[in-house]
Image (cartoon, rainbow, N blue to C red):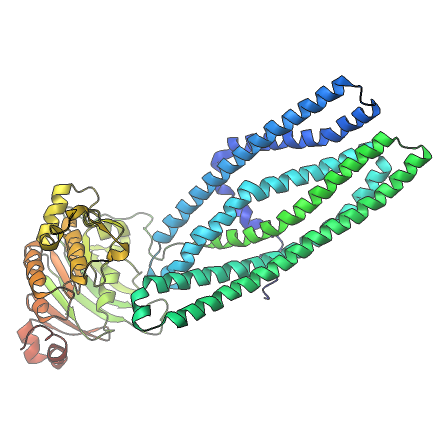
Length: 586
């Protein structure tokens, strides 16, 4: 399909109509705005009649002046009321739309976010939602007003002069047809422009998030050139859209002007022949002006409506997205209190974007409550996948995962995740204070509990040296903290949650020896009575595990203690020699 072609079939504005659910709760406001609009249109249509009466009364009719003043007052009040109501409605609906979009996007799993980069989603939340807001605050009210003026002007023209009115009525389809045809082209280029804009926003978001990497590898010029290329694509699409919109507006005005002039020429001949009064012709002329303005306004708004329809179509696709992992219709509940027993039974899995590669194959493992199990293996062996499946980030293709004896696929994902504390290798910190970030582990926790979690995670040594202590505000993604300090905060977050199961993904990889000693002591206390699964390469972390599981290409190669595996498993011995000896020597 070429960029300029319509992409949604005959219902060009159907994507906008699909968003009507956001308007439904505000029927009273919509009705009030419609009544105000009708009042303003009625006042506008009454003005030519009042002016004709004034002309034919030769300027002596005081009642006519009073009537015109009343019409002007009605027009002013109704216009002001309509503007306030539609602006309120647009802001309200836009807010609700953004809230629902965010709730939808943040609830989607990793597969969705692999297909939709964060920069692109931010563009949808910002630019596309703003276009929909503009539809409600300006485009739709203007389109309705002009449509009502068009219909009302035609009716009054028929009343003023039936012959000329019929002539105008016959000419309207000739004027409107090009508007509809060119409007479809405008919509195609509008969608292309918005897609290009989303791509450039997505690229900008990625590069700014990884700014240190960009600068470390001297990629500034390369990124600048690529962003410029993406921006130029958006500009060319916008230029094509503007070209068609300009053609649309000019053609509409020209056709309307030719049609009205032709009809007025006929009306002037009737006045000369005495078949029509000058006041009637003047009234007809004013309605012709209103008609011309209405058609010109519709042609102007039509292009914007087509553009907004493209944005609404993209937003609708996001709103209709459903997470791959869903809560069962009748979910089971995990037993209380939880013991932390985890069992993988012949689990097989491949990622949706790589269906040909089996990441886990016949993976079977049982962990007893309160034990610590370390997962080791080369890159791509499937260690992180074990964590992701246990956290219900993906649906299990083959096999079963049991948590406290219950199949996790039959339990609401939120209930499963409530039993698990995760400390990822790459710590994610949010804007706010250090204390706010610790409380992410348990939002209802008191300040005392959060401070205790910070002490157990070894935060005291550097937090108390800060002027504001735990109230110190963090920059974006924890800028200003070392990697070890960030991981200590993530550890405190998990400690505060006090889960049945701990998942530690290289949790101590960024810590120095002193910090690691503190955290290891905290973890030793925290792990008592809790199941702990560790992905680790450091010998100090692996040695304290009750069991070590060696993975290679999704298979379990061996299970045992550190010494047992050194003596019996060549893969583990090789890993110990080249990877596990970062901080000690065998």
